[in-house]
Length: 102
Length: 102
Image 1 (cartoon, rainbow over the protein chains, first blue to last red):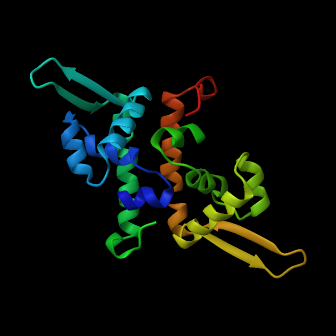
Image 2: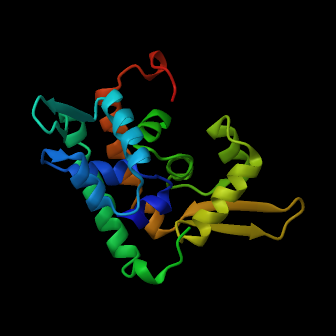
Image 3: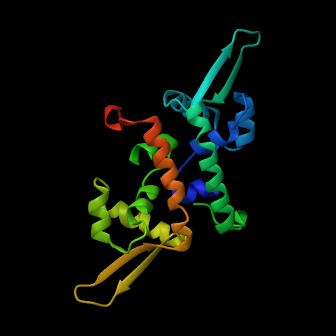
């Protein structure tokens, strides 16, 4: 997935969308699943995705506070497109770990 | 198309791929169709797309020299995916000119 996006010029957002998928996910889980993204950058990207109506943020008034992210309908409709991109990438770049990163 | 890519975090490459489409296109035509991209950046992006096996460059030994770009099979297989992205964008952002650019 990362390699697909590097090839066609995207950055973090498609990977964040893909990571959230059809679930409700806490910030820490997204961060852990995504690997090398910094918390600062992930926070900024999630905020932009929320502003663009792709991601929904729910804050629960609990102790400790809990914040969950999920995809909106608009965001969910991106998932099959990102799946197509992943299949395209797997077909054409079957061994991404052997390729130099851009 | 530009707005789609801004939203999901891509930059020029998907637009270049979309602009070339199924045709053989000269550099100057791609540059003219794409609008505000600089020739320097377009040259760099085309070179990277060529290195990634998405774009094919053909130089003809003519006076004046002629260089044409087309999509490889790998590149052509991205077109339906980019079309899906465009439709997604048109559905969810029907009036992109009214939205502030990021």
